[in-house]
Amino acid sequence: MNTSLSLSFELIYLIDWLLKNDKQKLTTLIQQAVSHGLAQDLKRINPNDYLKVSEELYSTILDFLVFLEDTLAENLKDLSASNTADNVMMPAIKKIDDENLNDATLRNSIQDAKDQLHKEREEGHEEAANVDHAKEVLYEKILENWLPTNKETMN
Image 1: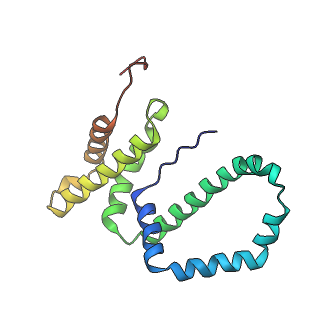
Image 2: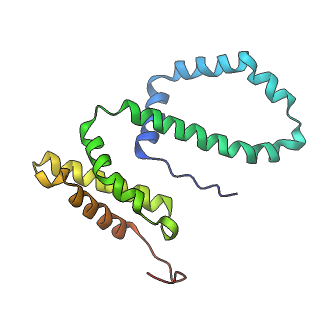
Image 3: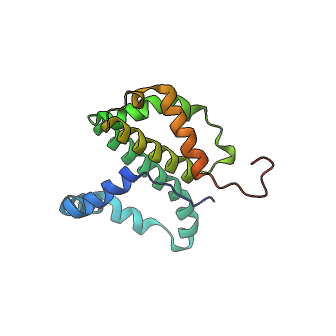
């Protein structure tokens, strides 16, 4: 089982923000889950099956994090700078062959490219909204963040 997770900056910040600002709502949500059947479900699980259930629940964790990230992204659409960067980079991101590129490197490169494009836009550079320029920045960031290994056939 592959147990590495890569979380976006925005998702980590959301979790931190919720813990700092809406802890009571999280507590209420958990209390409701316990009173609406979670406690009974947990009691039904045989302790000998914990390892098996834990492996199955790993995909549930991923699904939950993806749900949070997608919901957060939908609600952040008002941030035009981030959306513009995402929109201009998305076609390039979809074409990347990530077979020799790990998720963390790709996510870090995307975040670095978004940061650079946002900074350029704030400085008034018109090319920051240009698709070709965004691709170029993204590819530069991938090359900066990529750490090839000697075992790879092509570096």
